[in-house]
Picture 1 (tube, one colour):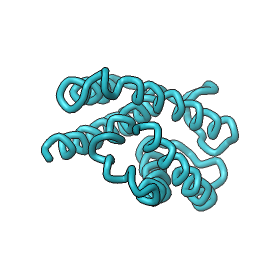
Picture 2: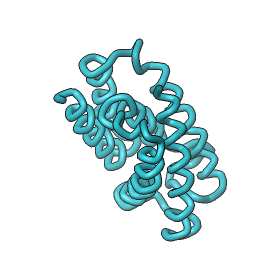
Picture 3: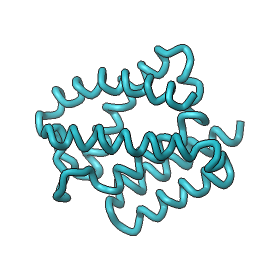
Amino acid sequence: MLKPLANAALFQCGWFACVLGGDSAWLLVGLAVLAVHLLWISSWAEDGALIVGVMLAGTLLDSALRALGVFQFSEPGPLIPFWLMLLWALLATTLRHCLAWTARPWWRAALLGALGGPLSYYAGSQLAGVQFGYGLTPTLAGLAPLWALLFVGLQRLAR
């Protein structure tokens, strides 16, 4: 029971460090969270491939959304900022641990994705200064079904 709670607390610390710190020295907190997860809660052998896979998939997805004008960052370039890439890696650390309960039945992952995904982007936009190119309501409405499908897929990947 202690490790899932620690995993959730670590993720929240990493989330705030990434979102509030951006591409600054605060990223070291996010990297430390990742290291603590791999040393104490899990291991590279158990979660390493999942972390890399989710980070790459999330980077591709959010970079595509950026290219489509859904997200507007102050940093130039075709890819999302590094802090958001790290946030995808941190999300991966939760799938087999504090969020394992969402894996089955599938609708739990879909519900959490539909609600939690857009809310996380909204909170991140308010704290990190990310703009929604199509406005708040259309963006969140579009992210809800996308994240419902995505989170079901992420939980399947985690199994």
